[in-house]
Image 1 (cartoon, rainbow, N blue to C red):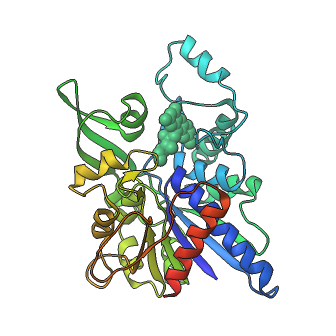
Image 2 (spheres, rainbow, N blue to C red; image 1 turned 45 degrees about the vertical axis):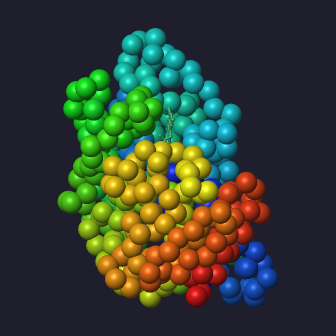
Length: 329
Ligand code: FO1
């Protein structure tokens, strides 16, 4: 079975652990030929250059999470991390001092930066980095596909101390704690970007397409904004099922509640589903999973209510199984 998942950072990475567990268990029960494949189309709008290093937060969060190198407490970066280089940089007064560059994490950025400078596209850099992390499980191959090999960066038009400013999403989120009121999220470079290698092919060959419970605006949004991706989703032979990132009327973690109002989208499971829209009209959804305490009435979209809190691997796997079952219709 070929499952394609559109994902961003922390929430998306956790959800992918559940998808992989379900397919691994299916492969164990099935015959040896039942090979599964997960292809993850990952947001690169969070990417930025700090201290000369190219950092890809969502690609790294997914890679570390599936490779079991993630710091599960923070949800990003490496576990057993140290911050010596960050402290030394701060001692020199080097900016930005607000971005958490861990010593172990820096190795990833050094290799990525060196390979990009040598002319390798981000997709090949990502494949090379993933070699070390062995993201698959028995009977299930996992491949990370950057949404584009061209640079796309999410910048935020906002008010900071009464002054209209444009700052990188990471600065808005980390340095400014997502506080400045947002006028607009701009995906710089997206109009000139093309889908990364394998992205369109994965959607046209998929047996199931899932939207992870990632931030609809700054994680799933940039992916859908890459020219050609939305059309490929709408033409995919597979059913497209999304998982609500709003649970019990609120965000579980992250800043979706600060992003959705900018687009005039209600912070609710129904609001997000209507934002994505039914594929039967001009949207992309065939199915939508909402938490058992939420409701969503979206004409043309089949809605199912299941527990959506990823409290344990078993709970996450149950969520993933429910999403895959809804893909089967
Ligand atoms: N998030 C923070 O809140 N503070 C940080 O200093 C920080 C550093 C960081 C470094 C590498 C990385 O891969 C992720 C990092 N994140 C940090 C998380 C990141 O900003 C968010 O997870 C995503 O960009 C939002 O999806």
